[in-house]
Image 1 (cartoon, helix red, strand yellow):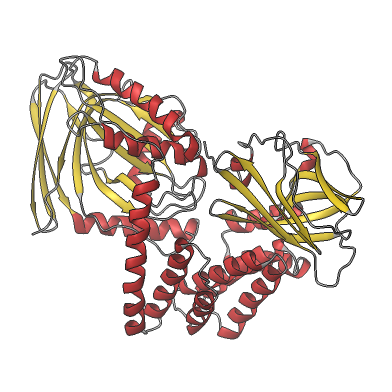
Image 2: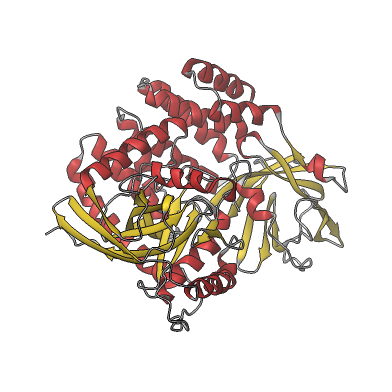
Length: 568
């Protein structure tokens, strides 16, 4: 489960139960002989993942892990040493952490070797630091550095722009050659670009970022170049520099780069061209990007559920009660992947007449543009039952934990299916029918309730507007998101059900919904900047859900759903 207080690296690596040490295939070299701390250093952190020993015996090097308090049974695989470079992987099932590090040119006895750790879609700055230690305790391995605290305060706490700028400049002056300085320069670039700074100032900051990134290797260089272009593109008044750096990122693409990387670069370049008045060039590239996005969407649909999904068996009882699955998740949340897979598999397995699926996005652990005010309101409604993501409910009752990674998806689907089947076997609590009419952007819906067994001011009828598929490629690799909640028409509180029978109408203006989403995301971006310009809100393939919920115990008594006709 992801929480705001956790780093993505530790959330992911702590789950690794690694195999015994594999015999490395490496070339003979002596410059890296000795003991090394493998450290994660992004954003001024100083986290030792393990102490690695490199020895040379009879002209042949060997490696071993002497200590790894944060990663149980840490092992190195596919080790290669060539000159001052070392490459190896951590392996756990289908998940790999790939380490690439190279000593500075001409340094025959390096004290520090810089590089990166590739963990899924996340690239983490890393260093190998020479040490005499053979063992390290958990407390010493995970340090909270002063510069890390300064950067955290500047990013999330300090609101005054001048105060923030002063703090970041201080960090950059003292750390102008390491990952902490790069993080400070990146935040300064974002701040100064939004202020409309001159191009010379912006170029200086961007080039400072790239100069530092090069010392951490080609992958860090590529990521930082794209990040600089993206930051420049997000300024209120976009400078031609945005196009310049985006074009550099495009030229840096190779045939070996994954399609997702190419799409990310083209997306930034299209945005930069559009915002600097180069509409014709943008249009041509946008067509290429659209084809690439379609290819990636199709590939994701084929491979996102790593097991065969069978149609659910018909319910055994005569009950017509509908089960409601609510999943609170996040596109930046790595341990949400197994819950997302279980949710998507259940959508395929169960009939819409039997099960309603609602996916609420939250800004956990990072900003998520599929979040909105109503999803946050729904989070508050469930209170302490939601301590992080993923969290799921069936008919208002929290399920067992569904968190994990792709390889855990099938097991989590089994857990969720069992809970859904039990819910489908419970007695009827009400009859509920839903009708909908649409004229342009305006939708009129009516819910008709009958035979409601429990009534009162705490029993509420609520409406939920859902988009069947929304595309947003966040950091956890879940490219397409299903049954995404866009709004709760009629309000979070819903309507009192004081009678066992009745009807309730609600009017929806999609133009108002879109404006509400846009305004919310603009305010959210000011508090915690998004990682890109993507604001998915096509509002196509919509469906409307009505549900009756007892606010006393949160139990959902009945639900119904209907597809909203497309605009004619």
